Image 1 (tube, rainbow, N blue to C red):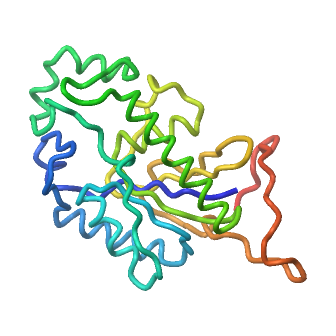
Image 2 (image 1 turned 45 degrees about the horizontal axis):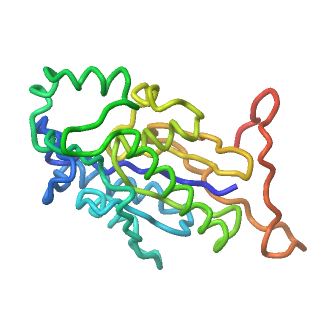
Length: 236
C-alpha cells in the first residue's frame, strides 16, 4: 500500500491579490509562502520519500525546494500536474469572474465547466488522476508497496485527485478544501485508495512512516491487505 502525500504549493503572490493566476509565468511564493515551505520541509524531514513529482509552475518548484535538502532526490516535473488552463480567465480578478454565468457552473456543476480558450475541469481531472496513478504504479514497482512519495500541485488539481480517491463525482469536488501548503494523504492498494488526510496543516506525521522490516523476513515485504477495516481502524 503506497502512500501519496499531495502537497499544494505555498501561498503565492497571486493568492493575496485576488487574481486567477492559472498558468501565468512568474507567479512565485510570497514571504508567507516561503515560510510555509520551509516549515513543511522541517515537518516532513523524518519521512523517507521515494520520489517527488511536481507541477512545472514556479510556485510549486519553490515549495518543494526546501524539502529536497539533505535528500538524494531530484524533482520529476510532470506537465499533467500543472494548474488548470483557465484560458481567457487567466489573470483576471476573481471578483469580476463572480459575475460571469460560467462561475455558477464551476460552483454547482464543475464537470460541465469548460473555460473559454482553456480546458474543462473534467479534462483536468482525467489527466491529473491518470498521471498520479501512473506515477504510483511506477514507484510501487521500483520501491515496493510501502513506498512514500510526494506530488506538489494546485488546489483544483489536488481536489480532483482526492475526489477520485473518495469515489466522489467531480461535481462534489468543490466540497473539498485544500489550503496553501497543506498536505492530503492517499494510500493506494490493488483494490481501492484510502484517504488518510485532507487539508492537513500540522500535527503528528508518525503514521506516514513505512513499517520497519520484520526480523528474519526478506527485505522486500509482502503487500499489505487492501481490505477495509470493519468497524474502523485502531489508529497508528
